[in-house]
Image (cartoon, rainbow, N blue to C red):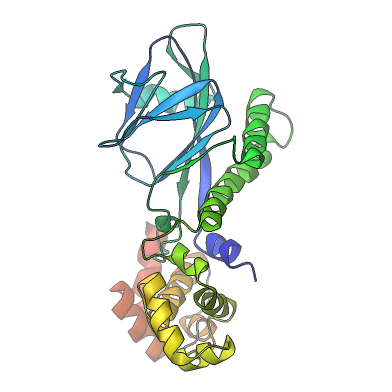
Length: 305
């Protein structure tokens, strides 16, 4: 099983095209809120990224920078420019029309595309939340990423049949490349789901849970299935993910159950069996404890929302 692919799909992690910007002369833009995480791909020239309490960072053509949800930041043509506030209404209109937002003066000497990423709010396993810091990927050291950005620009510049599907695939691919970069660099120090991928026994245990969420796993049976001692798994799983294997299994089961309750007409009994409970009563008790509502009430509320 491709654990990352499975988790992204189950979590409903998806991206969308945000704003296309062309800028020239003296320009600056301050962004204080974003719908979900943001990714800026520099399509031409140089853009400077400013973050509170950090030195400005130069982004060149083909570079990508990922910013977790809620990260305040500024973009400008050169360091030290005082950025202005974003005209959100105009940006929204431009997105709807597929237009380019132009900043500063002509001729344009820099360009970038902003993408947004969110995961299904019913899923509480923080897949995207594992990317907790700014990730800057340079085209110079990751030429394959520059290739993706070039394809993105080409599709935006020359729309054809299938462009929407192509853009969706490229947007998803950029997110995967960001996660791969973190994994390859072994740069995740914070306790998180992503850090679990960096520890082989923990990754193997996560894979088993995702492959068979209905199996009656215990720490001992998980350890035996991946050929490590129970003590090893008991120590390393919480150190990486911040949860015991049992706690993680329960949360993942509740995520899967919440999605089935909202998106299908399966009975509570059927869902209980699918996520590893021997009776509807034991499942309902666990679900109420986890989500604060009985399965039936949760189904009604989530569908209404």
